[in-house]
Image 1 (cartoon, helix red, strand yellow):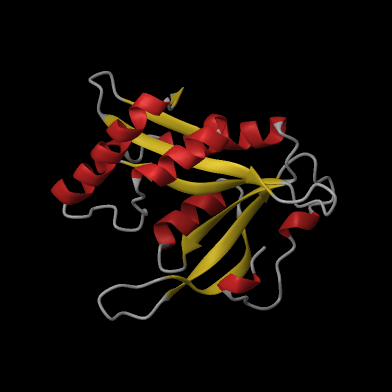
Image 2: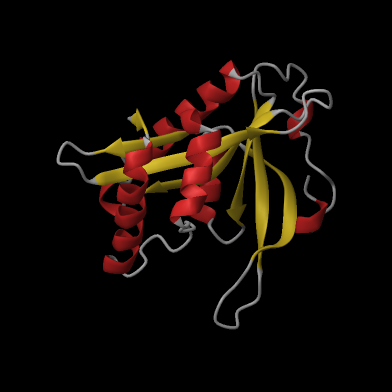
Length: 184
């Protein structure tokens, strides 16, 4: 595992988009971002951008995230923007290790929790996150835009409390769904 450097952003983008095209979108639920988006994250939150590379140089997986929120309102937290593991490297614990590293960074930065958004239909990911200690905080209606005439898809906002949130207030589920514009 290593932190991504500026010169590797093009490598990551090419490997991620190439693997999606060559594998007939075996991982269609992971967003593919443009190089400017990756560079923005790398410039602002370099410690939250971690790649796993095989000995032969192949991209095994990566996680990118950021720190955001308000300390005064006890909402300072780490956010997982994307987590992706290549199909041939799945079921090896790589996703769990990448999540653990992001959680450790968020702990060091004084976060109250780590959160992420996941498609409601992606039960494999939802179950994995639950096994890692995450719980559904709220449902966000039509968070993911659909293509090819399909309806937009809801997301779960899943959270895991960190040690700073001693009373676990950050993970108390909201009783009703919210819309994307209601998310701070």
